[in-house]
Structure formats: structure tokens, C-alpha cells
Length: 140
Image 1 (tube, rainbow, N blue to C red):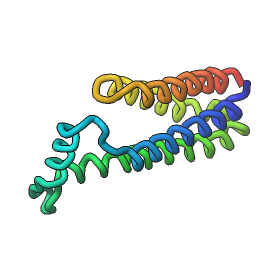
Image 2 (cartoon, one colour; image 1 turned 180 degrees about the vertical axis):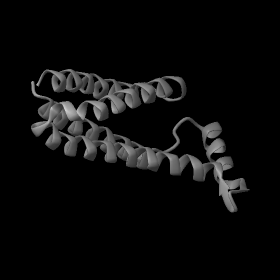
Image 3 (cartoon, rainbow, N blue to C red; image 1 turned 30 degrees about the horizontal axis):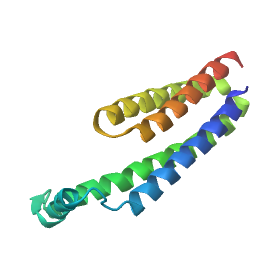
Image 4 (tube, rainbow, N blue to C red; image 1 turned 90 degrees about the vertical axis):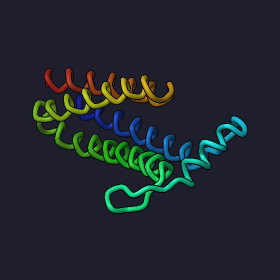
């Protein structure tokens, strides 16, 4: 399979990852009982000065979740644009593919340490497809 085609597939998979993350993040509600609700209430209610602004741990948690979604959307868009370049000059895309392959593997390792399996699976699929695209771009 050609690198350009693989990069389009990666773009779609990354977009699905963005959509799943966003939907799950925005619709998630506590369902593990009073302890979980207490933690969330504490995260929201305790404010402190950080960088000249009053913030809570909830602000950081929620903001990071939104940023994570935005990063995956940007990644998806980049892969789609990279596929256009790969049609004409696949070898020129290899350094960028390698960079995002390394990023997705590192992201999966962080997910494995601090989060849960679904993002790891998505990062693994993206990384495998990027590896395939990297090899394909070298052969074209």
C-alpha cells in the first residue's frame, strides 16, 4: 500500500480517536459513589494562585482533557495534509512520520502508566500504521 493511502487511513483513525476522546470526556459523569464525587468536588472547590491566576485542580484536569482532544484533531489534520505531500514525494514525509511515530509510542507509554487501555489501543493502531507508512515511503 502507498504511503499516501496509509497516511489518509491514519488521519481517519486519529480523527476517530479525537471524536471518542471528546465524546467520552464531555459526557463522563461520576458513577463510583460518594468518594469519587468528593474528589471531584474538592478539585473544583479548592482554588489557588498559579501564574497570576486563580485556578483549581479541576481547571487543570478539564483544560488538559480539552487540550488532549485538540492535539489529536491537529494530528489527524496534519496526517491528511501529509498524505498530499506523500503522493508527490513520499521520502520527504519520513522524518515527520518518524516524529509522530515516536510521539504516539511515548504517548501510549504515558497512558499505560497513568490512564487506561482505550487510548493505548488507539495510539498503538496509529503507531502501527505510521510505521507501515514510514516503510512504504522509503520504498516508493
